[in-house]
Length: 250
Ligand SMILES: NC(=O)c1ccc[n+]([C@@H]2O[C@H](COP(=O)([O-])OP(=O)(O)OC[C@H]3O[C@@H](n4cnc5c(N)ncnc54)[C@H](OP(=O)(O)O)[C@@H]3O)[C@@H](O)[C@H]2O)c1
Image (cartoon, rainbow, N blue to C red; front, side, top):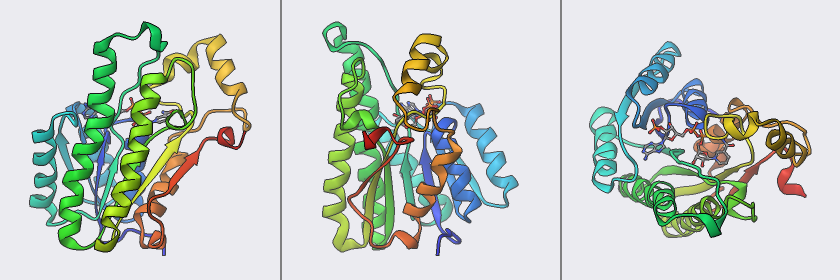
């Protein structure tokens, strides 16, 4: 049951990190995959890897904090593939600073990208899926969206918003056979947190908080995304899935 043959998927943030790993996992499970981000070279490299898997790929240079650009991105997927079955919204940014020191600009940038971007992408994808009467939306939040993490207050607030938005989306779309779920990762090694993980003191502190005593590899997230995208998850909606090496069990 866990395959995506014949499905059309879009992965925002698909140029690198978790989005890249998810895009490749979806393609491996049989989906044709559109990928979006702001960096052309990264998109081209991932598209080449998707095509090497024998699937169709589409690259879309898009800033997800721009509502009009997001609408164009979804229209381009539809124009190319005729439908949209799976939308994984992985594009996001992080910033670590204590709330008392945080500038208005940093706060706004995080909200524009992580929260507004999630709204724009989910709304545009949902409009297509409601019309089709089928679809699966997957948003990326974080453990910091539900628990306090010193230094990640603004990031956590944006991710808490992603969880709240996705839950309500699931309720609003259930009658249209459109599902919406959240993947909330703990620490995975990507460009987003390489600086923190490579800092000897901070890196060791982070790993000590994780019961499996290591951070995740992006490939370890692909299976969950494939499952949630697939018909095997047809009774799963409005849920938040933590994947954190045991961090969330504490
Ligand atoms: N890695 C972790 O440990 C971790 C943990 C919890 C949650 N997450 C979440 O997982 C998601 C993916 O993170 P990651 O670790 O893969 O980070 P990453 O390696 O930095 O990748 C982020 C992706 O998002 C894209 N992006 C950023 N801002 C964008 C914008 N305004 N418009 C379009 N695309 C944009 C980036 O492409 P461009 O910069 O080229 O646009 C890139 O493809 C994020 O939502 C993050 O918050 C990650």
